Image (cartoon, rainbow, N blue to C red; front, side, top):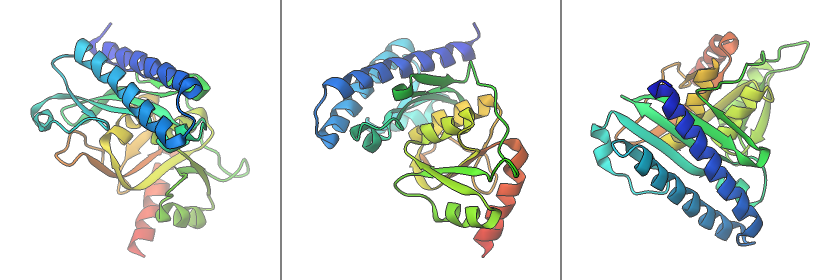
Length: 253
């Protein structure tokens, strides 16, 4: 097994284990949505941090639920962890929440996994799925996955401009998996998200052959001093140029 496959398999195993824990808490945890989310975030984070520190003691970790250890900026290998992406959806006992575990090397995403435990699925970079082609007329308009709680205004304008439809859902990871499963054709986000939100989705999308970029086409960078991804476009290569051009026109006004 190559080092990369070992990292990907570790990410997959940990995402699945954390997901199983979260599903158990769904059954036995507090009835109150916020209290359930708080308990679940901590439990999942504790599991993932303990395992990564044991399995990869020389690597740095950036987790949503941990204070940012700035020594990571001098590290080549940094794990990006979101123990529960879509806490609101989890608390509401919906299915569109996920566990993110990813590895960046020298500022580029390398390996990772996104688990959607409520559907019993986990996608990782070592075992990417076969892609379904995006929908085009007469099959139907492009479907753009967007945030359920805060869809970007540019997404609405883009849908109007190219005749696409918006598909709201939770979790950045779930939106990416929706594209991989053929339930959406594009994932577009504008507005700051953290690297633990974007890292694992970027990893599994790239491994499957989707394009991953900022809305201006630049590649995503990770392990930044301010660990923010301001926007992201994940889509099939066949539609990337059209989408980037449309977004550029809209941003020029």
